Picture 1 (cartoon, rainbow, N blue to C red):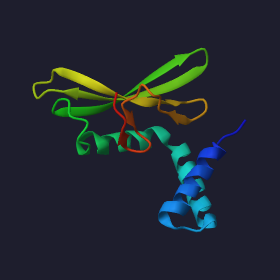
Picture 2 (tube, rainbow, N blue to C red):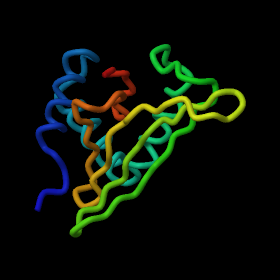
Picture 3 (cartoon, helix red, strand yellow):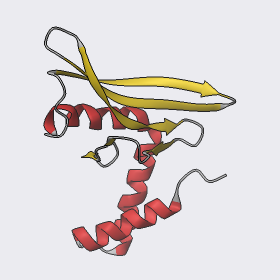
Picture 4 (cartoon, rainbow, N blue to C red):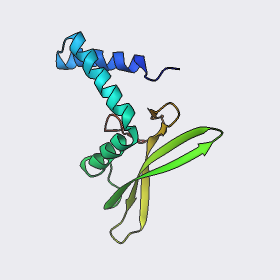
Length: 128
């Protein structure tokens, strides 16, 4: 069973070569380092990305108070941790939420589908 997505690592390395003008060797080393760091604490990393993005992104504008929530789900041996940004008004009323994908705990991989509003790994708003 593979522990890392080799395709994503190679794509990230080529992105670094093209955009950051790195050598392929240095880009591969950095891509592997990023993949290993992401693997170790993927949920905490994604939560930190979302917390930084909750107030900094102009597209996330529901309510005044924004909180990053996680919800664990398990069925038939599949474990997932869903991420959302919940928005509230100043007096605490629920205003709405933004879906941010989920982490597959078995494969330890972040998945952002086409129905999600925010890509937590890349810190970008996708929209509905």
